[in-house]
Length: 610
Figure 1 (tube, helix red, strand yellow):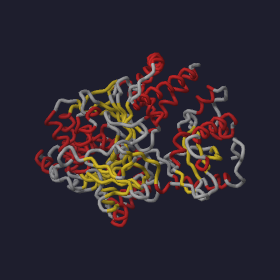
Figure 2 (figure 1 turned 180 degrees about the horizontal axis):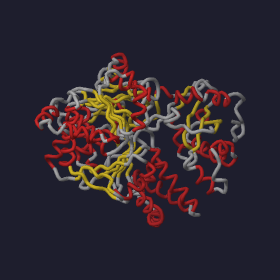
Figure 3 (figure 1 turned 60 degrees about the vertical axis):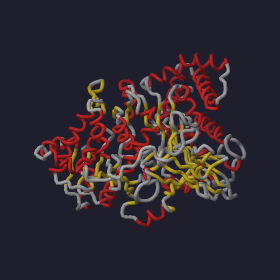
Figure 4 (figure 1 turned 30 degrees about the horizontal axis):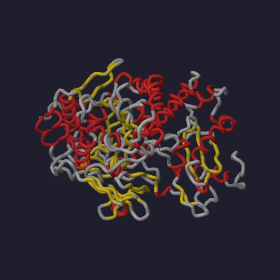
């Protein structure tokens, strides 16, 4: 049984006069001494109280005022995920300005488009490299009056210059915006076409934060709640969480270098994490390969299976067999406890979004005592529209609608959203705005279904559905996600539109490959090109493909694949900043490889020809 509409009324009454700056002011009023942030300090962390953070925000806001930033001005911001990111964010709110975030990995042409289209009058960059990228296109940006570089000490200079601005001017400016006013202009990362600017209002963030805090109170409103942000705050997902944390009183740390993430988790001891599925895949695969290297691979895999089965029993409400309870207790000491310790030892929840996690990983981490709450949303929905809740979750779904949000499934299966989180419009693009809505329902472009309890399941992107020559509709994610879970696989793109069968382009994971090769008695220093042709590597990828094929019909199964000799990265132009594949770019760049897959008749053996 399924539903077509599921709406949850808002829990917190809307305040049409409220803006994002109020969330910080209210937090300072309620708990001035609460540690709202922690910043790296030697091998540890130094706390920053709510009151101290607001003092720094006001001082920087005065600097912006002194520099000539007026209420409503657009200011570009290009930097990594650090404490200073949120400091700048709130200083702009207090100054009455509108931030236009730019991914710190953006090319000069992308920087030019976003700053030009938004009408930004100033820009802040973090590093000399960012400044060099900006300098390339600065002559094409006549509206940019000022450019500041954080690592050159420009923020401190601004603070000094703003010392003479009176407090009451900042107090006046921070109250100018109301709920319906633009808070930020976030450009979609653009897996297709030119990025569009999403106008997100103060009300979008305020009402969603206030309602989400109640819905997720076991995660964010418990004493001592804390997290380390490592996903880019230029993306709406981490940006929303950083604002929610201020409202809810969560202590936030930052680690922009994911290679240092485990060390940061070990010293910070967060109670919850915000991550994309690839992070959980990496944690699992790294642990498995480490166990394999120590001669304990068989034990790890047995422990993983018990963890998955144990969680499945709990979710189904079944009594756990005595033998499973004994094995679970044993593996908890031998395996699970070590993984918990590696993640800081205190993580109870993890919020996952941007791509499907897969039930197996969800159940595995659940048995570790880490409840992964999968959610769903887009830039246009201020990040989350649905999320699994601590007391109301189903692994394998992206949860029910948040309070104040409605989900509708259109006749063709498209997921539509309306409510407190839905953006106002696309910036200076009324045609795209009109096309994106059916009344007040935003058309997401995703295909999904609702069950009888209102839990949403996403099956793929509407534009990415593959229609084979035989007329079979295939959602590529259902095939790609299980293959990508293999430790040596980097990325997967299923192909087969108007073709006789489904094939796949597959890349290898350069980080995991050497460990896997060493564990399996092969040369660990193989290049990607060598590994792509290696029989053992190809056989391992074939096993991953075979496993994925067991979950679909023969008409939907991958019959052939090719392993590419290169990786897809954000720098190569094949991944978005949130690590989603740019399917259209990949199809354009690897036309030859795709054609080769279909050049000869389908192989009837189990070994791919390509």
